[in-house]
Length: 352
Image (cartoon, rainbow, N blue to C red; front, side):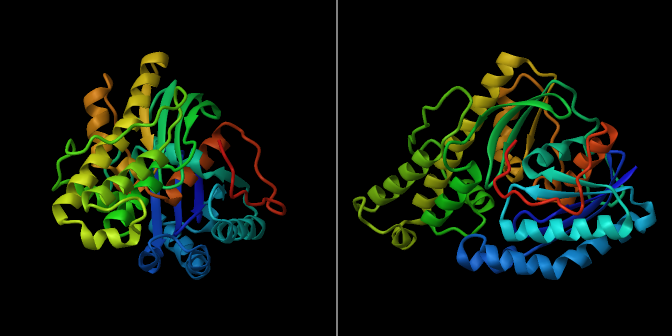
């Protein structure tokens, strides 16, 4: 069973072919991030136009890498939400057209849920991938963290899960982006803050952790605390414009602030994950989403969880078609209803 997965929720145009929910046959990704860097974030109109240009070549590349044509594809899966409306529309319209023209069943996919399914890939035909030894077992605790999402989910089985907690404001990846801007570091913020933090003292500043309900997250207060700290470090008050901070902060101050922020932000995620593990005692723990690539997150989880964790390949943490195709495979395997290719619509605010 082979499923073509299409992902266009943000700035990556991606397609992949996955076999039997475990083997990656072909994976193609084109990103428009270089066009967004100058703006310090993703510009929806630019992202949508980039998807229009890239969608057909990316799908064709995924099929070539998989060594198959449309006769070797059993179904199509596509992200229908959450994400940017214009970006989602390109992928969904492409998938609907393919499903009708090629007579393939179509599965609409939840982007956040799909991120967890990158952890179910255990083999890859293309070179350059480091894959898990085995698929995670149930019950499974999933920490899903990215630029748009911070969620803690308990899976009892495929398609049977409880959302334990989510962010009440900024997602952790969004907080990293905003702190990077305060420090004058390039977009995306996660990698740039992480790199700067290597030169800093993570215990230099005592930044606050938000007090939330049991498994919920909050990062807006931490982000504001970083802003106030940066202003105080240069001897200014809260009226000093944040855009002028990078020119006044020394490289040492930037490194120490980055390291202190990263430590507290990651500790916030790990605190909740460890607490949930202790309550539910799952058989496996996984992390998913772009922030799952963070070395600091992986380090803290490995040190604090009394449970070994296998991680997806770094290339499968950010948005990709493989995670979409894998979830599509399990929808077929578990006889989940297919979507109507004539009416499948996007849902930019889709949640788990």
